[in-house]
Image (cartoon, rainbow, N blue to C red):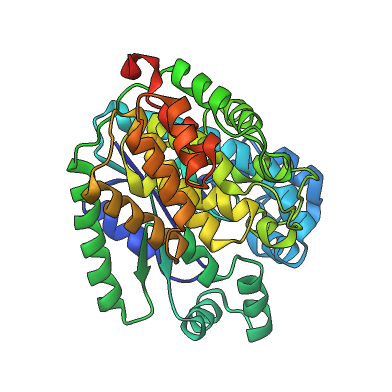
Length: 403
């Protein structure tokens, strides 16, 4: 089943898009609706939320007045974090239960609608991320009309979210909802066709042997940026039940980063040491285990990890290429020229810059010695590239493939 995350700025039209996708026959989940049910009287989070924010958030009938609560949390980042900590884990449990039921019933596509997927760093749980966006002035007009807000209050709610231009960077697909309702509907219908195509497209899912991961950790880089080395990255993923979640990774940095995770790379000082590329082989193996052979998914995962660690576009492009190479190597692929060009195109699109020569040199070394990590390392060293990265990509093939 293809898992799709649907997100976007407030009042940008994602709920309308979700309704179109439901009409196309896809399963849909509205996480905002689930959260609303959880804080309703009798809901699993009701008592905790009332205890945390006081009875002043309640309407006369005992229900949570969402406008009152919303005004509190949009004006106070600490209160917003407190509410999220109370509600989000329960929302995720309910989402997992419903997703499992959809898969058991043979669902082809499940679309999960949530406003803060990227901000919460949970977007890599999905095979594809769709961001619904609209032009800023139109977003403001819609929000004021929809919620009866004055301009100042509406601007405050927009400012409390991640800037739309930034959120788009994490999207596999951007749907522009700036035009008329008819134009948005047409875009939504086209999106439904694209998702149906993706759901029918076969994805190779070769097993990823633990021995391959162990070999990558032994032969690959030992040090990572800001204390997040490959061994620590793998441990954090295991702690998150096999998922790459950005907020726990931000807290695992040295020093821990407490701000929005996507600001860490720009705010942390440049240590002058290894960058996100040191994690490319383990990110590649994780993506293969999580999704199968899917360069777009692998590059998206690597882009997010790189965004956490540094803002260097060249390093990000190189890391994306090598993450794809590691995933494909573990699947038994040694690329020809056409495959390399395709991988570089994906890496370039996500990083928005050309792939650096050093990444190409690492890939050259692997191609020349795909079954011998030590020889791949020597070839990379002779070419002025990172020998441990070359050894790690070759090691990703696993002992059974190299024998």
